[in-house]
Image 1: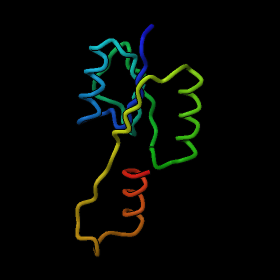
Image 2: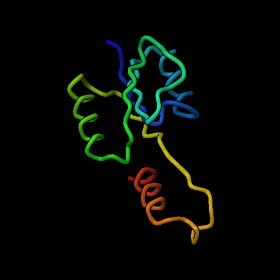
Image 3: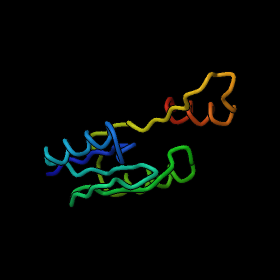
Image 4: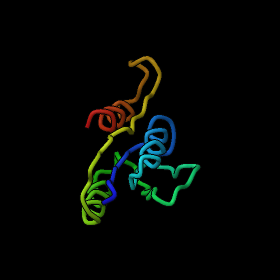
Length: 102
């Protein structure tokens, strides 16, 4: 039976590298990110979702769980806003904290 992994932040960077390695290992990969990856694989199932949109995220999670068991979950998505704290708008601080920690 094929194992199934769910990875957030799959469109680039570490998430992309992890997804590609899991695909080589024979996993089916459900990849979630705001933007689609610039690569394709027959066993990569991409879902577009802004993880800060909790209503949409709940629907996506329900959809994934209805499709079967998850063997591996990798919460990789993250964001960074690089400026002195006193210059960051509160909205950006909240968005960054929610995505990176929650």
